[in-house]
Length: 291
Image 1 (spheres, rainbow, N blue to C red):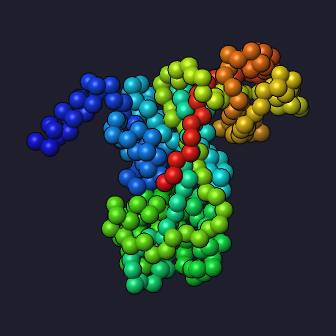
Image 2 (tube, helix red, strand yellow; image 1 turned 180 degrees about the horizontal axis):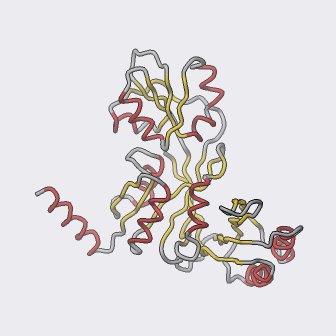
Image 3 (cartoon, rainbow, N blue to C red; image 1 turned 180 degrees about the vertical axis):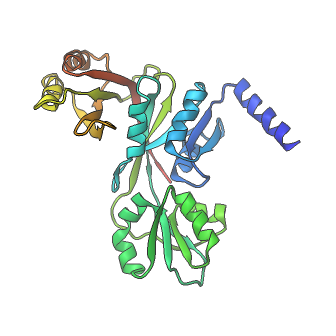
């Protein structure tokens, strides 16, 4: 009976044009928090076990959308996301950029000594000094997400998790302490889809995957047309090509749309200097959400 009701609910949502939104789960991750804030109850949120799985689901269901982390202000680039973008170039497009102010708390069991602390490696890195001061003897264990960290903490009376304060209610934990890490902690996300984003007058970026000749000065030559046309680069990330030592492919973001006059001229020239240059689409840059 329950399965029938779930099926009817899913059919009902599809009938009224509500897409499924795939995100890195489980419930309580920052991806889940942002997906709910961005889409509210207009869409069905579907948890995926890994970032690559988000891409897989979007390919399987072109009507759906994915939400993936791209960069954290402390931990840097989320390479699983960039690598998945490279593997899916030409099949999956970036449709929107948005970000989340990350609030962290230490979750665990009140009155118990904390001997092990779980979290995503980015949060362990961001809170390294605070953890060293407050819990110098506790072991630190990196896991795939902050929500999985909360699950691990739930399973052991002497374990704790750096996770969203909201995950305490989801997993039956106590908020032991609010984070006192002083620096801003922001994660940038991308919404991905099987087709490019529609045209918009909002502030925009364009994402590219560039494979360059393995020769001296090729990156410098590739970047030249953008500088000459006054097109700003907002991100460039190099990734090694599997099986080809010292060969790299680049994930590049530029300001503006790919059909803007200056960008179009730069791209025409840059394409001639590349072994391949694939656009992941032009997309709007949206605001920052609070967790």
